Amino acid sequence: MTLAAGAACLGGIALFVGLAAAALFLFEEPGAAIRPAIFDAYVWRVTRFTLLQAVLSTLLSVALAIPVARALARRPSFRGRIWIVRMLALPLGLPALVGALGLIGIWGRQGLVNDGLLFLGLDQPIGIYGLHGILIAHVFFNMPLAARLMLGGLERIPGETWLVSANLGMNAFSIFRFIEWPAIRNVLPGIAGLIFMLCATSFTLVLTLGGGPAASTIEVAIYQALRFDFDPPRVIALSLLQIALAATLLIVMQWLLPGVPEGQAGGRMTRRFLGKGLAGRFADGTVIALAVSFLALPLAAVVAAGLQADFRTLITDPLVLRAMFTSAVIAAISGMLCIAVTALLVRARHFGLADRNPRAFQRGLAFGVSMTTSLILLVPPVVLGAGWFLLLRPFGDVARFAPLLVILINVLMALPFVYRVLEPAMMTHAARTGRLAASLGLGGWNRLRFIDFPVLRKSFLIGLSFACALSLGDLGAVALFGSQDMVTLPWLLYSRMGSYRSADAAGLALFLGLVCLALTIAGTPSGKDNQERGHAF
Image (cartoon, rainbow, N blue to C red; front, side):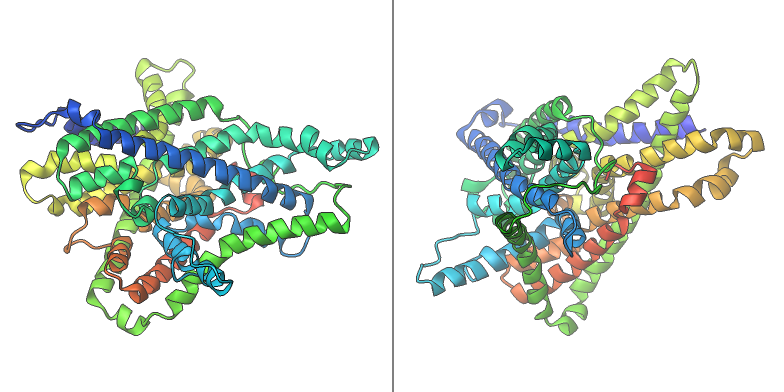
């Protein structure tokens, strides 16, 4: 029964993705040719810009994260450090659209930075739209991630190493060269590959801050070709190009990613004997203060702008209420469906590998589950949506299918993350309780009620909160299928920004950001839980 349910889930996922891919591959339109669209100047210009902004964003994020991680590692016990480390995780749970609005409040034409430069006599030299804005936004979201992962690598350095360095009288440069840099170098390829992948497939930030065709990535070009120009050959060419690019990046990441799990030794304090002087404390304090300011000011701008919104008018607006209700329903259904599908896939894989001599079907199912949870990243939401848009167009108004498609796409996008939360917890629990449950004759509903759920409840809630937060902040799927009949909070926020209703957009951004951050914080395990359950996050 478990194997059949897992096979059904795996088949459903393969069918959903395969039909979308087939629609892209097999679509034909009289008088249209795919090959010229693949090689025209526009496609190559978009591809070059996608790679250029991803490379620059990765280099900036990694380079700026190194001094931040070193400063935090050198100061393991000052007051408020734990909150600064926790702040590094906040951008992960913040919807990209909300972060973009906060960055506009700081770096925009009327923002804090340009006001300060104007006060100093300069004529607003910084622009938030275009390549500059995309780079600032990507650094805002990815530099904290890189710093946190590097900090984990630095904190895994054995305490004996610092004793040896003190006995040898090593100076700061020697410590960085022989101790800190090797620790950073071990995690650097994986961090850089992950950030490059996130930046190359960025959609919402580029759509919001791109500023025009000159600063457009492949995903944004797919959206514009389908939504505004309705040019299926170009959509197909760009989608295939995006899939090929994502596949190449995933292969490179699998090759570069180190096998050191994050969190096993993170947070362990070690005694260091260098940097105790005033100059060292001042340098580290300056780096930490700049990093905190860079992260906190856009968040403060979102809060300050949001508090000025007319909430009484906002919450009585029927369109806003409908968007809140739609987002809540989509997030709840997507989250619960994602948890159910992921749990079935994990159990099916476990059952498939439990036998000493598994049959070919069992081995194939286990292999398929492992591959699917990684390969689903090959097909971004916009590409998946484009395929289903072309597939459903002959059946009439595509907007009629929008709720179901958005839910299913959100489930698939959250699946890789939720799988990495549930899989280690469920496998560990099964290894500990499998024989006991078998000896008691417990199975099915009784096993789930008395043995599994009490222990796995927190893991399920963590996965549910991540899936709901990702769905609430998603703009990719809704951007293709959104209409007057189906409006979500991110789509309404983007629409209000586009129509220059800044006050309403600020209020919606504050509400959406607080809800997503609350879900992310609720779903972030403590260090103790992380070590006990072996969570990937």
